[in-house]
Length: 178
Image 1 (cartoon, rainbow, N blue to C red):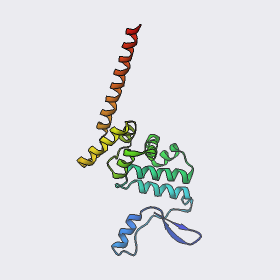
Image 2 (image 1 turned 60 degrees about the horizontal axis):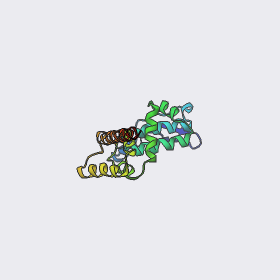
Image 3 (image 1 turned 30 degrees about the vertical axis):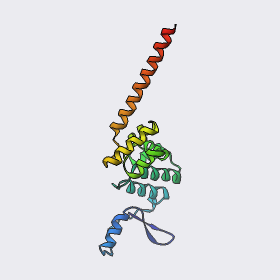
Image 4 (image 1 turned 60 degrees about the vertical axis):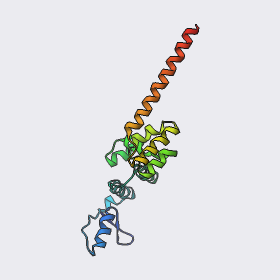
């Protein structure tokens, strides 16, 4: 997808850079292209098309998706709901990926290493104590696997159960003292 820049009369690539580079490597001098009409050449429209194209790459990590979404939101001034509509995604999908940009410690390390690929799992993992985050990351590194949502959920469930037991124990002590 290209558009003609009226100030330079040159074509500007909007989407399809990987295909264009492959065509160059193959020695092609001409390639088919869709030329956007003047009405669709607003910078916001070009940026949205480029973002959609980039999000379709299979090798993107969730952290890279979050970074691309954040940059697009800053560049265009859109809100999450507006961007979600443009991308055909649920606003919560946008929010989950943007939340990843606040990750720290083992969660950030796992995201960068590609050991953590699900924003929901990252959210669960962020709520765990640091020692458990480190254990999940070490397990994934040792086993050369990804951090599984089930493992993070099991730890979170165990913590909730332990907290309930502690609360119930404290209530029993308080009742006994009355």
